[in-house]
Length: 261
Image 1: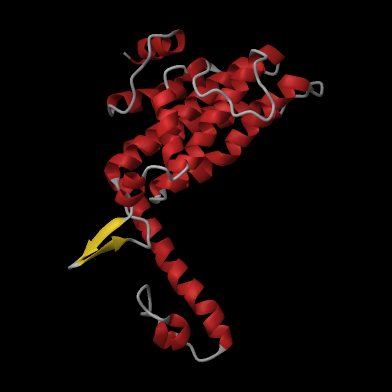
Image 2: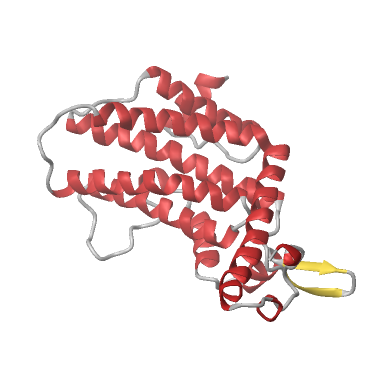
């Protein structure tokens, strides 16, 4: 095995191995190792170029997760119906945060689009439940409540998630080595695409944090602290300064703008 360490994509690794143990383990070890190496390089490139966006992510996550953590420490009566479903969906959103961030910064953009689309739908569903408009078994409306002006974004995420946009599916993996052209078998880094997806991810976290504040407040579980709200303001301000979002003229947006000006 030691002499085979330079093997990689382009090689017939199985035929190079001497026994079935090596034939079974070497290809997955070597090739998935190459994949992991490139993902790590993509993450480093993202941090080198856009470390400030990781600060926005940390601020949004710290605010949201600390709020949820405080509420987890409180005792309250068992919930049923729509309120129980709201807490279920908020929890599913939390479970996906890390996975979504990893997909974006490591160059797994179509996978990231699928996860972002789910984040969008979770936000929609929680809001629908809050106004008794949720229909079980149906996809949530893409433009409900805080997402009222995000129909185009949802459509673009759906196009990538459903692999229906051929030019996008090609462009994000197209590579050229000498006179050879084709799809790269390891993820490629695209800075602008990563920035836009990352900003959307951070903005979804902020929106879910404020929605959770409404849900928990209504249920008497708790509300965001001023320090937590300030961290959400910091995250939003970074995205705004980077030109990645526009603040809508609505109550929360106006409050955020006033808080950071």
